[in-house]
Image (cartoon, rainbow, N blue to C red; front, side, top):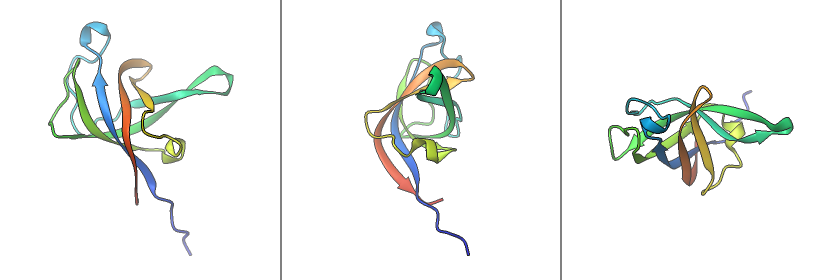
Length: 111
């Protein structure tokens, strides 16, 4: 018999992309964007990155230097269970910082 899974966290965020001149992306992002997010350091001062899937709301794309609203769905939800509104995640492509995602609302979704 399978145990019921706990709801997976999901977040409504303000996704702000750095301008290209400041090291940001060269192209806009669309729904389905899947960068790494850094939530902070773990023991020993190492950075712990987590993949997340972004679905844009109200717009079809967010260009470098712009901000928009998106739904963030962590691909490894256990690392995100303690994330609350106001928390900032650094958005990275590899180790390159390309923006930030500030949590406006945390919700739970069944997977």
